[in-house]
Image 1 (cartoon, rainbow, N blue to C red):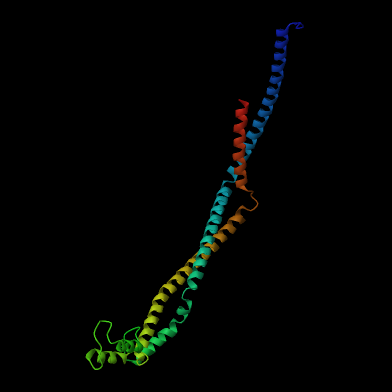
Image 2: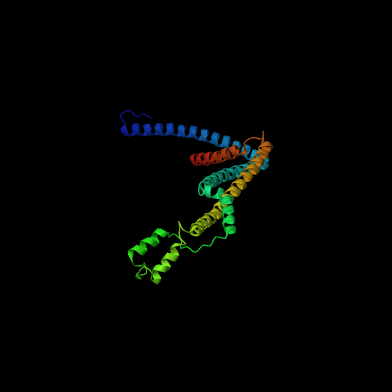
Amino acid sequence: MDTVGNRKAAEAAQRIQSEQDRLQVIIRDLENVRNEISHYEQRKEQLEDVLRDNQPTAELQKNKEHLENSIKAEEKAMELAYSRLMSDFNTNTSAFFAKPLMNRAISFLKSAKIDDKGVPNMNSTSIDFIIERGHCICGATICEGNEVHLNLIKERNYLPPQSIGTMIRTFIDQINTYNSTNENYYTNIKMSYEDIYRYKTRIQDWAEEVDEISQKIKGKGDVKKYEEELVDVKKRLKDFNVKKR
């Protein structure tokens, strides 16, 4: 066709050439896509065959990963138990180790049979102050020789430094307080130790299982690697099929 001098004919010829060039590109790309699809379909079949043949190995690998995750969690729990043990150990430790001595002291003091009639946390100096002040904390007037005065004098005889009985009773009360604290101390230490022992035992048992599985799957390849590659291959196949359409 003679297109010289005919603008529309020239434009039509140019469009035809452009579309033909574009068609050739599409044909070439389509061929490449088909080749890629063929390649990945073959690889997909290969991977599926490998995974079918190694299904027992895959199960072993999953079990191994589960055990390894359990070991990590147990190790974290054991670290917390260690921290708790050290924290408990640093609380009232001296009182706990002094417990046998304190029990011997209580036994000795009970066998001494010391009469104890004093008021806790009061001493003779307090009585002297009340007498000199002239009136009791209850409001009663204190005069030398009256009943209130005589009772205070009598009470003073039971208080330190005149009476060791009150000091002993205070001492025994303190020991009893320490002992009650020691009960919780011992229980907490014991629980933490039992937790640590249980965690260490589990970790050791699971680690042995992991070693056994590692020996069984040794030299059989990484099944997980094949599974991950299969996922990637399927995705590429999907993308190429979309591009092909």
